Image (tube, rainbow, N blue to C red; front, side, top):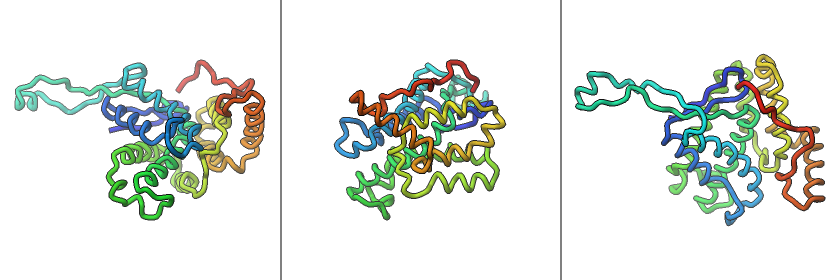
Length: 256
């Protein structure tokens, strides 16, 4: 089972699970994201590419390139005798981290990608009761994504006050967010600003950062960055996601 917990300094969250947990999550990411080879929904390619950034870390985690921890599996000497087997008393869990602002974006993006998968599986343009369609209701990829999101929500609920969590939940599930139109460089800016905060300031700003990401279309800083990026992409004849803002660099060393 996948577990999501805050990092020590609230820089982000730690995603952990056994090999199969993380492998299945990666498979689900690949199944619901959109790429240049997809038949439809090409307007979601850049958003999907960013989601795949987290997928990259999860994949490297179960390949053993990140951190590991040993989890008690409650095997006892008596159980071993009963089954006539000698087994480990711990399971290996693989771990990777994700910044909090980035995670807010990913959760919102996954909501939209799940909606697309529901429409594709149910073969419809609209969502009413299609989540209960026979081709959708037991889809294992959607179930895996929802379980992943649910673990993150549980983590946030244990971090925020009750009132703040209720407001956060409403913000994250607002209608007509169109998160596929967010400027990725804006998320980078929020990530870096958040990393430069103290732990106490991070806690105070968690909900407001989520609100800025969810309501990006009305954010002055986002619109300014988006304009600069769009003009640069046009000038250099490339995708907006290929543009890097001068002076905006992730710190090489930081404490999670």
